[in-house]
Amino acid sequence: MPTLTKNAAAEALAQPAAGASLGGAGPVLPLVLDSEHLRPYVVVLEKVLSAGFCDQLMAEFETSDEWQFARVGGQAEVDRDTRKVDVIELSQRSILQKNAAVRGRIEQTLYDAAFKAVRHYQKLFPFCRIVEGRGFELLRYHTGGFYRTHTDSFKRVPRSLTCSFALNDDFAGGDWSFFCGGYTLRPPKGSAVLFPSNFLFPHEILEVTGGTRYAVVTWMI
Image (cartoon, rainbow, N blue to C red; front, side):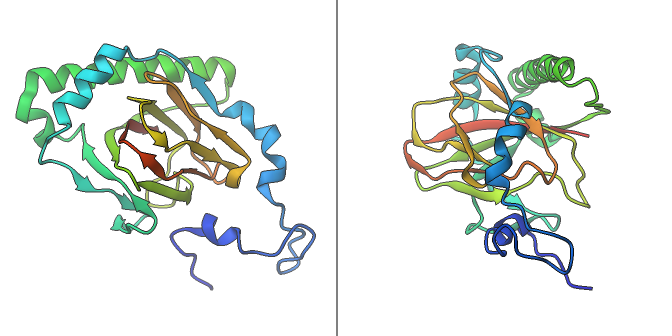
């Protein structure tokens, strides 16, 4: 059986156009053309986090030596051609203990915001069933940073819902791009972006062309 690569979404862009057959399975549908029907499932909630909290979080970690290269795929590999991003695992005990009082409050605030955001999403889509969260990652995209087209759920790390918080908006580039370019958005500081983690929602973070983009991401299963 053929082996699937770690970034099948990117390879899909090079597949035959709509109407071409693939092993008798029918036409290959370009998702960009159908994005209008999936857009309602990408929800932006503004002012989920206060501007003051966002500033506090960024200040706490801005000069930290805890930043690592972000990893990709089920094998958790560093691939800077796919994901040029730095990350701090905010929910790791070793990270929390370095400044327990401050970082504990940060994690609790993120948890409360994520809980409210998910409950709002579930009111819109009642069949979105969530069992538990998977912790928080702080992401930093310097100028030139990006994350190529991908999806968030795979065999070793199955996920149901993605929730990302925008910590700042004073940078150039760095927009969200869904459905292989069919839908782009730029949430303001303090917003949450929620969407299904499955294969129907390929997305990317476009290259940051000026400044530094900060975000927090978590996933639910």
